[in-house]
Length: 155
Image (tube, rainbow, N blue to C red; front, side):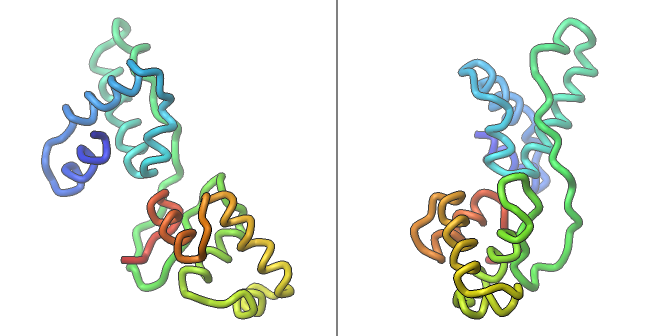
């Protein structure tokens, strides 16, 4: 529901009510606000802004009902020429670099040369990515990273 509201919002439609309903359902069923961050970082930013505005409008009576979503650092908009790993607390900087190279279909040997490490070390980073992204293949890891908002610039 929150993703549907987010897509409508990005298309210029007024979907604030739908987002508020999703936020209230998440609160009712005991989901943390992290669920919005996991769905998409930009959705979390928008949900936080809406919650902040609602808390400001409601005054002290309803200010404590909807807690703001965790703040996510804004990333600069740029053309989608190459895959780019998004800064996150999930992946280390080296893993983000390896993820970008995986998205370009490079082999372990090519990845190792690109980041200046041995092939065994490159395999280690790829294995860690598979574990963190719950993926079984290189393509699956790239797809999961896209879905989780950790990789942008691919279509």
